[in-house]
Length: 113
Length: 112
Image 1 (tube, chains in turn cyan, purple):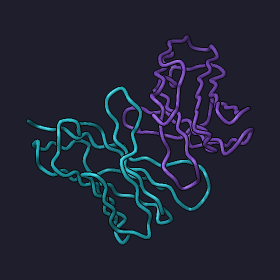
Image 2 (cartoon, chains in turn green, brown; image 1 turned 90 degrees about the vertical axis):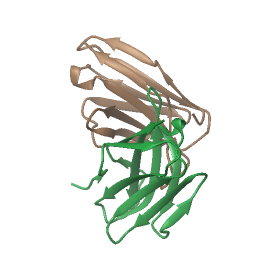
Image 3 (cartoon, chains in turn red, yellow; image 1 turned 135 degrees about the vertical axis):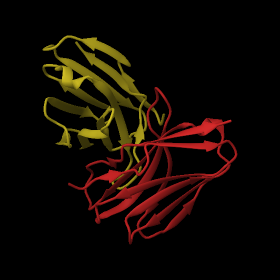
Image 4 (cartoon, chains in turn yellow, cyan; image 1 turned 60 degrees about the horizontal axis):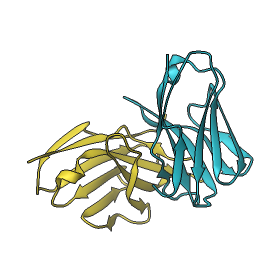
C-alpha cells in the first residue's frame, strides 16, 4: 500500500553542524507535507509544511525541500542545538478528503556535544 | 499544545473492560483525530471527525468507536480492551482539510 517512510532511523550530528533528515513517500497523489518534532513524553509538534506546488520553504533555522520527481522530502536544520534532539516525522496527505495524515516511522536525531 | 487537553494522561485497565479517552479543544477547529503510536509503526489513524456527529474510520479502527456530540469534545471508546490496544493515544485537531494537525500530549494506556 501507499506509505511514507524515512531512510534512517537514527541520525547523530555534532552540535553546531547542520542536520538533514530525509523522507520518501510513495503516494503520487500527495500534495501536502509536514514535518513534526516529537520530544520524549510529548505529542508531535508542528515544525514546517510545504505544498506540492513548491519545492522549498524556509522557516526559522529549518528548510524543507520537496522533490516530486523522486518523491523525496527533506528537513534541514541549521546550526543544530541540544534542544533539537528529538524524533522527527514526516507526514503527508493528499487526494482530497479529511482523513488525516499518513506518517513515516520517524528519525531519532541525536546531538553530540 | 494548541488548546488541546487529553484525559486521562495515564491509565491501566484490565482486559475486557471498557475504556473512554477524552479529547477537549478550545480552538473551535472542525476536524479532530485520534491516533495511536506504537514502536515500529509510528502514528496511525484510528478515527476522525469532520464535524459534530460526523465521524469516519481510519486505518486501525477495529475495536474502537468514537463520538462527537459537540465541537470541543471527541471521545474514543474501547468497548472491551485487549492487550493489543496498549499504546499511546494522541488526539489532534485541524482547522481545515489539507492543513497541519496539532496534537495533544497523549494518553498512555496499558491493558493488563
